[in-house]
Image 1: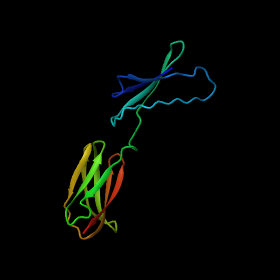
Image 2: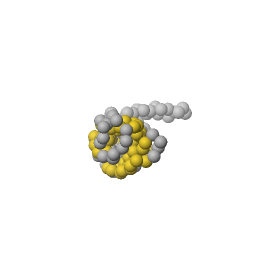
Image 3: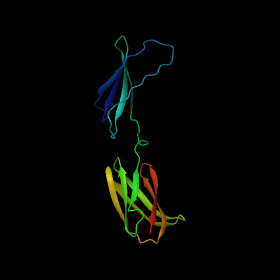
Length: 153
């Protein structure tokens, strides 16, 4: 059989599942296990193969990267605005980010860096800008990017 083990620190392991092995086979076999716990923390997994004679062999550990699942959720409020507005960004993790306000020609109006905390974050945009359409480019330190369209009345 195979024991599926999980760790939060890479040192202390807990068995979270077990799969019956097919025994000796000359065919490629696939096994699957889904960890039902929803957690954005860094987790480590390893596989313990236990043979019929009791011998054990460990595979791993691995730490799956789930950044593709964690998305930024940014918007401006109010949008459209008459003057000042807020940049609201929801993030699943703490990280540094940069945001750049650009006009429709791509010219940089302003740039700022800040820290995102898990949850909803608000950043005031107090730049005086003429009426028109603008784009705010958000880029996190782990490579996530989002572009938000903002209208100034």
